[in-house]
Image (cartoon, rainbow, N blue to C red; front, side, top):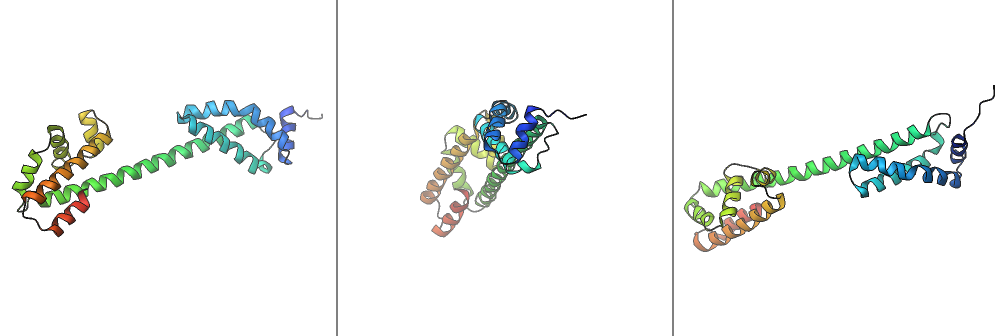
Length: 198
């Protein structure tokens, strides 16, 4: 019995042979549905569009590997889903790296702060902290005394991570200025201290 070739199988056969018009047919048929599918995974219009286009590029580049006898619908959805998951993994790794970087910076700040606090400048340092506005004092102490990260402080106080970061930066600058004016600290020591905490 002769097998009846579906119209889509015929289109795919043409795509395998490098027919750009046949590829355009597939693009027009699947693009909108794939973009909606990808949006459900990524929750981002930008990523959905980028990944969907990347899926079609991948299909074209690897067109010789397509089996017209198998479900093209299942194939292209699988390709798109894998690309979407890989994108999300990449984003997660980048975000983790950024958070680890800032956590290491915060740890360095805390280590240096402890050296100043327990050294001969502790009284002057505490006076400098008292000069800070109440919220900056609280954020600084949560970071320095309790060793909390910017994310943890933000969650505890119900503010954004950037707000915490900005408060820490301005608090440290205020303390720097106070120490330079009121403490008998040589410039190299102040410079070393500030190069790490600011």
